[in-house]
Image (cartoon, rainbow, N blue to C red; front, side):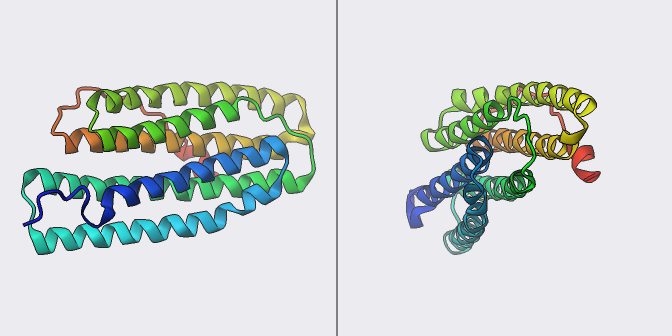
Length: 227
């Protein structure tokens, strides 16, 4: 009988690899805007494909382990949490891919744009992603709870960016299209932060720790639906 499902078939290592791919995607997409380098945003397409491949491999490994070894409580919690976390990470990969498309639209237009506090929001989302995976690896409930609080910070920062961009759209008509894409980018980054919150909640489930924190979740669904 397998007792340590965490190390078997490299489940933990593959999850960390998946996280590193998505972190690179976030960095590349936003850095493309800051440095005006379209090639960085273009590279995100292949990174998304790799993320989808790794997520599929993880699901297959976890399902196979559950079916063939019928793990007890701790092992089952680990494997089901790993699958849920992989799903959240792949969701972030899709959102970051959309972010890169918006970045390419802005850069290809050649028009001036105001990036606002988007780099700061990207840093917040990236940090939360790294911390929720650290909480998973280290089985650190305190770190997981810290990530839960980060979602509200990301939402507040997104609202600040929204106000800045709306003010620009009112006064600089030539920047309306670019500002609209930047607003979408801010929404994608906020959603990535909330995905990290979901991962932190999965970590608490894995650790069998009661979650008494109920973050005030903000949503960009209306903005994205109207695109």
